Amino acid sequence: MTITRRTLHDEIWRLDDELAEIQSAKKAAFDAYREQLEADGQDKRAVRDEIGAFKKAERKFRALEKDADAALELDALVDEIVEELRHNPSGTPVATRAPAPRATRTPEPAARNASGEAVPCQAPPATRGAASSLSPTAASEAPDLPAVGGEPVPYAVDVNRLPLVGGAGSLPIPDDLSIPEFLRRY
Image 1 (cartoon, one colour):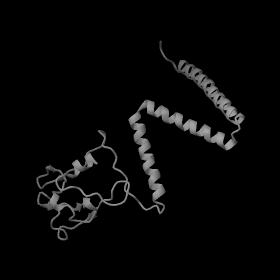
Image 2 (tube, helix red, strand yellow):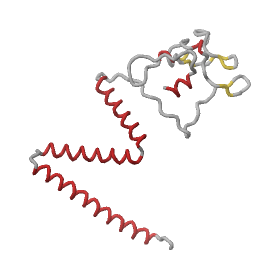
Image 3 (cartoon, helix red, strand yellow):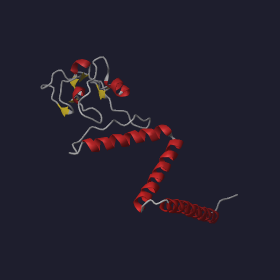
Image 4 (cartoon, helix red, strand yellow):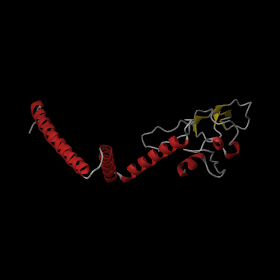
């Protein structure tokens, strides 16, 4: 059977009518529950809160049924944000967690040596702490900056001074652990 614009229109129209009937049935179910709660002596605010909580619980239940891991991860993120808001009333910026790596994300650009070959931008452990966190540094000011192809890297990150994800303090990186390995683990 060939689908024409007219047959598509008719099918969508029929489905919209079915959806309207279903929404009407849902409203009737909530109205009946409201009436039962009011008959049990609950005030309007308690009834409103009960209905709202039920709707949230239903959405959460459906999300858990669909993809439990994603739903739990989202709940953990929401809890983290709520805790930050409760315990950081001044609103000072706090570091957020790094997004999870994705296959669609473009890789970080590599540095190039003098011959134009790509070289990973990873400082050896001895250079950690050589420059201030995320600040441009001249080679003369910090001679122990990592060099690529004999040229100093113009930006260096003191990973020991980066803020801890979601909280106070700093998280030192053990010298025997590379930065990418540290990020994978934590």
